[in-house]
Amino acid sequence: MAMALRCFWHLPSLLYRSSFAVTRGLPLAPTGCPSLLLDGCRQCVHQVLLTRQLATKKAKGKGQSQAKVNISAALVEDIINLEETSEDMQAVVEALKEDLSRNLSVRTSPGALDHIIVMTKDGKFPLNQLGQISLKSPQLIVVNMASFPESTAAATKAIRESGMNLNPEVDGTIIRVPIPKVTREHRESLAKLAKQSTNKSKEALRKVRSKSINQIKKSKSKVSEDTIWLLEKQIQQMADSAAAEMDKLLAAKTKELLG
Image: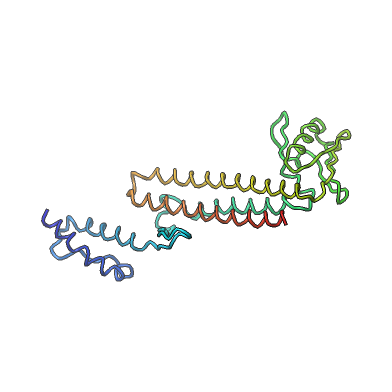
């Protein structure tokens, strides 16, 4: 017991030399520290040094400190693939970027109807898989449903309820979609759709985060609680960063749509 206390008594001096520990390895245990306590002493120092290496920055508008965790992916590859998690999150961001760019524009194009989901008796399908979409004039989009005539009514309903302020007209298997004038109401409707798309993407992002955290928790029996905590915190930071990028995309698109 006395020996153990002696180890902890020397801990402050070890931390004082932490800058050398980072580049030259952990300091040796104090003289007299029994070999039985050597590993434990080193672990204590390592944990404190790891904590001290966390970068801090002030939270905007709050004046509070927020720890920034940055664990090397190579050190935890047997627990979770952080690079893969980052790629999955970035894929969600890129999908949102493409959706906002291709499908939401003041100038309506044939591609604007691609994402509309049609409910048929065989399941849900994007409109562009059921009909041939073309731009006949700057004021008219035509959807040819000759390949799936039985889905014409369902496609018409999906277009009308898409929230894009469209009023399709049916002539046999041909659906004519007049393009509405660029009114303030139309711009606001598109901005609303942009927000809905962003919210769906954030939900997909949360699923990636939850999946990763659940994977980490499965390793609780193999690694320390501190390691689990740090990994969870880093993944949360990655998700927060991706969500912030989504907010920037939405803000830029909203500004574009509303003029």
